[in-house]
Length: 449
Ligand SMILES: Nc1nc2c(ncn2[C@@H]2O[C@H](COP(=O)(O)OP(=O)(O)OP(=O)(O)O)[C@@H](O)[C@H]2O)c(=O)[nH]1
Ligand SMILES: [Mg+2]
Image (cartoon, rainbow, N blue to C red; front, side, top):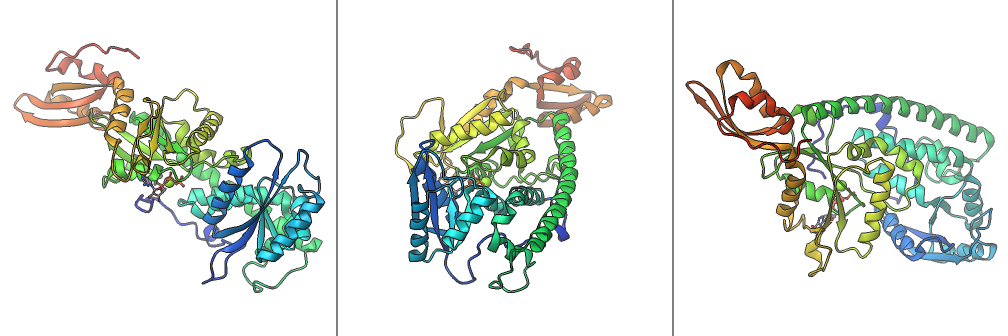
């Protein structure tokens, strides 16, 4: 990830410096924050796996799940989700393990957050807030940072009253000392609300500008005709590693058209000579609520505009199949239904011989296994769009060489007395430009588009 280039990262000092501790933060030099996980098992999804994932999410955020309190119950208690007895039990557990916060495995309303927090005497956050915080802390681009902050603020606004301690700290603007507990009075609340609304507005304006520019880059890319391959999938399956392994040191910097605004796009030349842009995307997580998918839409739109989607799964993860279906759900939501998909089980170095479906590719970004197969498959999906040609362009027609360079790929260039010889790949829809200058009879395209 760190290898990816960050061109055109323009500074937004006033926006980015204002980062605040929206979350329980581990005091410096101390270990992870001990937290208790809370869950209500209504039989709607695999609660145990969801809790494992929540524990991993907490860990990713510098917290350690030291205990879990689960209640099986078909209807939630309106005020606290968990029943009265369970809440009392959770209070004892929090006390016993010295928990500093509790994380509910689901979404809570403002009043539920407030009630639970009062009952448990620790900060309470929910799964969505945790996911948003992780997205925010991992965001590497300015746009990603602003997007995730916006999503977090939008989520918090209606829940403001429930966030006593966390918000008091935030409202303190970093001053006032960590222990200074502000009264959660109306005035403070109003101030917080106004502060957040103003910030939301600033972020929205800023993002609208960025999105406009992103659209322009994307249009330029489309116009240039270079196909886009997007790596999509669950978080941590190895998308960025695959991108690095595939593109090696060939950092996408020469072609300013793509490099300017997009720090996660690189050029990849397929064996047929076809140049493609490989795009890395943000990882998915299960039960990412709809309005959050919305918030990340502009980032994920890279996938929606791709020519091929590579769905990446972690071969060593027993939940790989489910994670792929989560990925598909998000893709469908983005309107990617029509785009050809290729499925890759990465990290195959971590597993033995797994009898996977032969249509699924096994790769390892670590050992390089399967990468040749992957590019060959991309080639076979995309190369229907290109042909190898040999032409002799008269000196008066050298402008045509630009089409080869930008939309195709020049393999050989030779200056001869009667013109310049090119062996190259050209897009099928560009062939008509070159017809008069072919040195070899080019077979008619098998599949006219
Ligand atoms: N053993 C093994 N580890 C891998 C492989 N590919 C990636 N990893 C490791 O898996 C972890 C996640 O890799 P990333 O490339 O960051 O995953 P990602 O899909 O980009 O994750 P997000 O950006 O969070 O969506 C890293 O620690 C990698 O070193 C692989 O083929 N084999
Ligand atoms: Mg990544």
